[in-house]
Amino acid sequence: MPNLSSILDFSDCIAACNLISPNYNGPLFTWAGVRSNGWVWRRLDRFLFNSRWSDSFKKILVDVLEKTPSDHSPLLIACFVEGTCYPKPFKFQNMWTHHATFLDTVKKSWDAIDTYGGMRGFVHKLKQLKLDLKLWNRNTFGNLFEDIKVCEDQVMKAERLFESCPSEENIENWQHFRALFAAKHKLERKYWNQKANIKWLKEGDANTNHFHSYVQTKHRKHSITTINNSRGEEVTSQADIGDAAITLFSDLYSVDPDIDAAEILKFIPHLVLEEDNNMLINLPDKDEVKTAVWKLDQNSAPGPDGFNGKFFRKCWHIIGDDLVRAIQEFFMGIPIPRGVASSLVVLISKVDNPSSFGEFRPICLSNFISKVCTKILVDRLSSILPKLISPEQIGFMNNKDIVDHVLIA
Image (tube, rainbow, N blue to C red; front, side):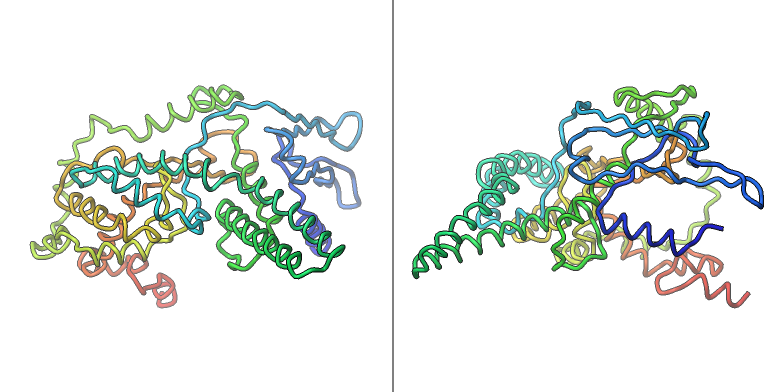
């Protein structure tokens, strides 16, 4: 058996050095040999790189070749400078909320559009705000990483000036640039923290190198470089992989015309009373909508519109009334526009080196406004769940645990 202590020490060493291990194509083990108990297989050969190496190449592939004539498998590393570039989708950055002109920019954009309200009006305002925030980010907020380099140079120059001439003016100048650099560095931590989405780190953690390394590792792990399509053919280009995914999920999420939903529904007993139904579809007021917004995770991944819960909380005094009208339209039964109902399908690998889409777990990321509607319905349904769920399904009920039934059994 492998020495667990040595394995943990090796893993700790890799983590301490912020080294990244890519996915491997080919056999799992890279060494084989005969010992007293027979054949032994191990993964002894590895390729590790740091974040600077990762930043230098768009794509890194590692192939494990056959063990001939050696008992070790050679590793073939392919690094690609150029990659297929696609437009990056808009994502709201939490660090924007710390800028002095952020709220004024949002309010000016939001009030500039005089819509009829409701879901379509809310989506229309978000689309315009997205354009305005992109422009504001480029012209006002600026490039954070370039600003940090400039601030760092200013701090060093001010420090040298103070050391050569320790006047009151020079020390104030040095302290000013130090405070400016600290503020920019704090924004950088928030940027990487949001990008890494590490929920178990505290707000004060300042290891931006760890965040950067974690983001790079996560990106490598979830990148799809090769896949088998529905015909069993291996495809490697990003265009072909995208076409294969669209074909699969279009078929998977399409309605089967041969299935009669009404025929199925007639076998489901009517357990919801009229007063229960009235409670479920009752129009929510502003307090109920606000409560739902604050119950949702503000840092959860956004949907296609790119706005997360942090934006909705920070700008509640600006967008709250329009959001309430949009949510009320949903409960009126008005058809949901595409801008509200659309979702992103994200593929999370269930195994190392997946070769087919069946080895991925599809996760749907909904727009935040859709999550608010769902949260209100969930909170209302919780009061009548005992009527809908049998005692054998206690694990689905709030404050209940399926372990209770296991212990009883």
